[in-house]
Image 1 (tube, rainbow, N blue to C red):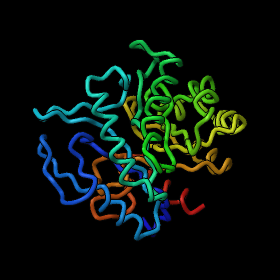
Image 2 (cartoon, rainbow, N blue to C red):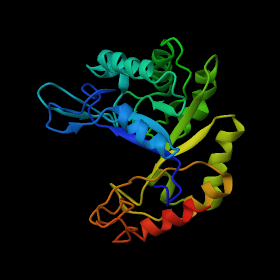
Image 3 (tube, rainbow, N blue to C red):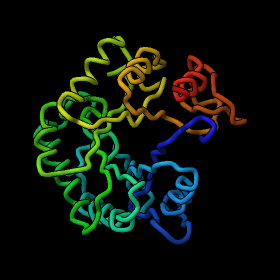
Length: 273
């Protein structure tokens, strides 16, 4: 990561319920080993990197894993337990300002179905943000996702002002897949980003990848647009896996350019800017 000039690391929490915050590693109910968040933060900090802690999934005692993507947060049966665990994380990291917390990964239906509305987005985001701010002394940056599984800025443009009113250190997180990479142009993407910046909405792209449910996509126009607008952008995925087109690294740790429009080299070159 140092060689690539990566400055922010967004950490996947795949078992929020059992995830250790400090202490020893444990084996979760679904068999996966979970390393303490503090250990991960310490390693990132040793290399002068900001850490974003993001909950991706919940695991029941039975081992059943429920991924957060596409879900309405407040409608989930574990929502109350989720809020308690997130407060525990905020309490632990309250004096570590290089640790940012994202409230939820990619919420709400892809096409705004399943009871979605911008009013629901605002209600949920207020509740999840205020839940963390109830921790006395927690001043860290909080990341808030867009709607449409995190890809749409429409909720932010519609209700962002209402969310920001009386709240602070909020950073909006959008994910760049189909809704940013298909049938778009550099000029159009710049206009969309500028519309958010004109509304004083602090923004980053927490994920961009070359392949998703629609297949392989082009990233050049998007990367040119975020470079032009100086918009912080993180790639999905830092992993050594030649068989995964989204992995930035191949099996031996070099740029992964296998069946992915030279994604590894493309994103490494982008970071040099």
